[in-house]
Image 1 (spheres, rainbow, N blue to C red):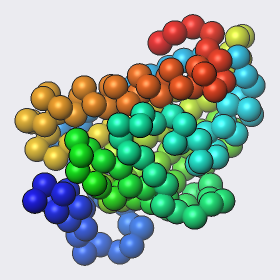
Image 2 (cartoon, rainbow, N blue to C red; image 1 turned 180 degrees about the vertical axis):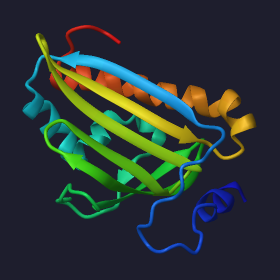
Image 3 (cartoon, one colour; image 1 turned 90 degrees about the horizontal axis):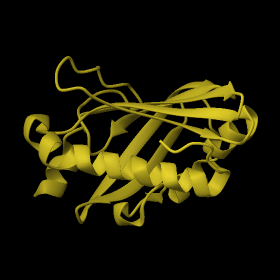
Length: 176
């Protein structure tokens, strides 16, 4: 029942690939920054390869990219995934809405577990290498209940894992 609710929830009768409207209420923001001892070009290239998402996602999420490789990253690119949220299988589709190599890109959820997901990835040069910045705006379903009980913790754990994995993959100068 929960899986059906989550998978149908974002399947409104809008045109394929059309962006959902930004909600006015319930928005949460997660922001993470770290410095890696790599150039901006090297750092961006790592994130530009969608296959690396698997290396940045904890195994308990059950993350799998369904879109065949290679995925051409560009504005309009669609990427399909499957994940598991507390054992419930979910399909997730994101679209790249901004692609500005090697400084920035944005992906948004078109279909998936959130009412809203907008993830900006930025790469800024600094004296030690590259500052990697993740800013995610999101709204969970039933956010007034699910966010404080489950979602805040889960999203935080996923991005904690991501920082540790990025440290392993690219090296980190200073911890988050």
